[in-house]
Image 1 (tube, rainbow, N blue to C red):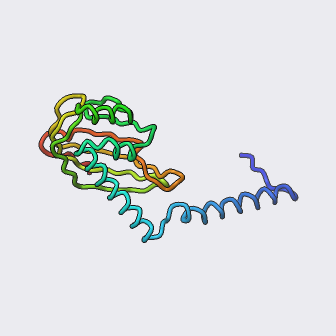
Image 2: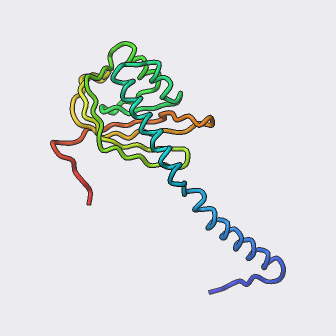
Image 3: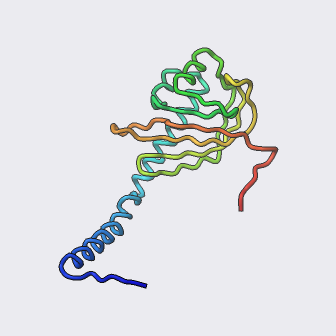
Length: 171
């Protein structure tokens, strides 16, 4: 096996550069991922409030409120597996082809990744969508992204039915 040595000035500069980069990477890691507890709590509170506003808007078919919550490039994946744009969802609310009689949410979890919040939850729903009547228990994932003004918007949503009467839990 052949090895190389860092010879002379150029070799030491390379070794020093690698060492400095490693120190920077190690020290920057906590700064990039850690968030003070109070700030995490405040952001969690913001997302919980937005989730409440989303629920109210969908139950009341509030097109104006929903328009403000959804990002312009929003993409949803329905329980039937169809794609839904912001315009599609707003049109369905406007026309009445999407209406929910009840929408009960539970088991919400919120995780943050920089300016992105990932929300998972359970939803028990009764209503109708452009895909047809909907009733039952579902799991959903909603992705919120904070824009340059500090406002949160929904960029993605996906819902899946919970199979059978009970949920499967992975070990």
